[in-house]
Image (cartoon, rainbow, N blue to C red; front, side, top):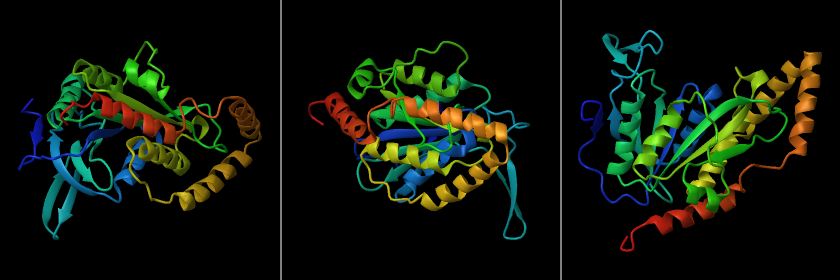
Length: 286
C-alpha cells in the first residue's frame, strides 16, 4: 500500500467528526455533475492536500492522457491524473474530499487505498456522489436518490439497500471495501436527462450540492441560479426544435408528476438523522 498511497507530513490530528466525500470523474459522473457539486461544497472552505494515490498503476494513459504545460516560458511540466485527498475545513465538521478519476485497472488496490485513508484518519462515514443518465425531464427539479449497504443506516434514514446484481463500477467495489472495514457509506445519485446527456446540468449540480450540505450539516452558500437559467433556456431550445422530443419530454413530465416527490426523506430530515447515527457510533469517551 505504501507504494501507491502517500500521506503528507506533518501528520494530521484533531479532526472534527470527519466524513470522506468522493466524486470520481468517469462512468458515474455524467456531465461532470458530481465533480461540480463537490467542488461547490469545498468552495468556501480551506483545503489542504493530506494524501495522494499514485496514478501510475491504475490508468491506461492512451485513454486518460497526461497533460504537458509550459511554465515560466520554458519549463515543461507533466500533469498526471490526480487522486488527492484534501482536508477541507470550515464551519461544521471536517471533510476529507477526494475528487479523482475512475481508474481503468487495479480497482481492488485503488479502493483499498481509499479505505486505508478513511481508516487511518478516523472517518465516521464515507459519502460517494454520482450522476447517471436516466429517463427524467429537464423541466422538473432533479431528484437525488440515496442508498447504503449499512442496514442500520438504511432503516434510520429511509434509504434503499442495493439490490442490483450485474456489472458494477468502481463505486460498487469501494462500498464492498468499506463494508469489510465496517465503515458506513452512503451513495447519493442525481438523474441526468438522457436525451441531453452531453450538456451541462447546473440544476442537478445544485440539487446534489444542497443534499450534501444538509446531510453533512454544513452550510452551503454558492448560488447556481444564473447557470441554471442559462442552461434551461439552451435545453428548451433543443427540445423545441424536435417535435418527437417534445412529445417524449411531455410523457416524462407526466410520469414524474405521478411519482412521489423523492425516493429518500427531505434533505433536512436526512441530515439530522445521519448526524444522530454518527453520534451513536462514536466511542463513549469521544
